[in-house]
Length: 370
Image (tube, rainbow, N blue to C red; front, side):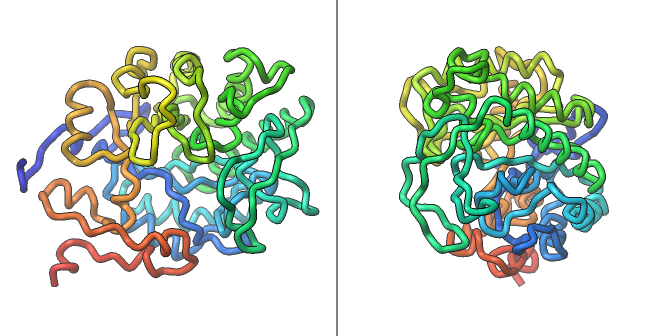
């Protein structure tokens, strides 16, 4: 393995629509819970993202599109104008380094709890199917998951409109684009997968119907942003939030084909298996995704510098996003380029803490050696 002067494909520039990324390393969206109770971006978050701005592209942590979509403590939102204004601290800090930044738009669906909801209402989902999990962290402490309320057909257009309004606020906040979070067992993924979608209306049953909600969300966002500034994230192999459907191959290849026709900025696929695989067939690979999605393709999940570069060199991916490595290595690109060792991951107890510890206190390589 080359230990210094690494010049692989991973570090080459990449033209993405009308943007030119300085390399193909993407900072993956990672929930970090530093936005406070008002769910507004702040100076600490601006420092965190700016520290990591040697990436070719930054995708923010998941950002809720409505109060109904909330399911985590102290995560940011884009459902109020004040939140959009607060995000400008982050976008301006990242842009000072010449790096584009997309915001990830999010609705938790059933992966929420009544203590997050207005008037203690139940969380919503495509169907009243309870998440089979140990517990959820809520304002009341750890609580068991609840059986969600199935959305009425006429309510769904209102949620689509929440995404559209959040996309408008993302533009006002100075973001360069948006990523629609359709992965990891949150609301859009719940509509996509037969495990969680038992509806009998036009949003359920066939794969075409189950895809409809994602399609409506994407098309609503495309009324605000051009297609080359919109990405979508999918997790076909994942088990997070109690997901995994027997027809996952049919479902996700169908979704990828439909999204390909929209000429998006990219399709972001969690193809790696370090967080588990549902085992309902052979896992979907990036190479397979490439056969149905011809636009820019981004892989994620357990990649190293070497495996990421190999995937790009083989033509299976154009970009690779890194998550955990970015927690404790703000200079990840520089470490990749020079063969410097990576700092170990921080204690998981600080991943979702509320202050600078385990967040902005990791030094760059030279300072760490000193």
